[in-house]
Length: 132
Image (cartoon, rainbow, N blue to C red):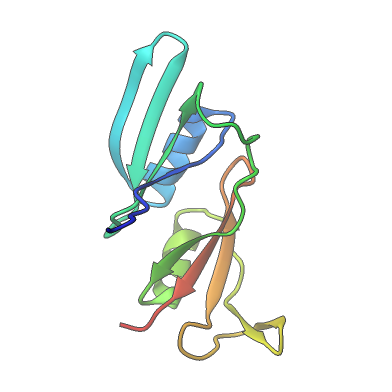
């Protein structure tokens, strides 16, 4: 039996600001933006190339806005991903890696290079490089 992670709920305060951030700044595809009831709005976005989507909106999820921590996106070219984020106005860390259990500036070895950023609510994201 396969167990597939297909949707991650992201708690946000401002649905329009979140939609703009994820769609315009990060370049995620907007799968749908719907209002199934007057008090409910659901926006689903998907990172390019990902089988897993993210959903946010009103009337969904139990976590407070900004409580999502360390969700990881994986790319084959971290330097290019970081440059794209910077070009889109996203505040993103420098490239870092783990060495002896602590973060060190600069790229690391295979699977050991990361950058970090937050959405407008403070939900934190990790971008990790995985060589092609």
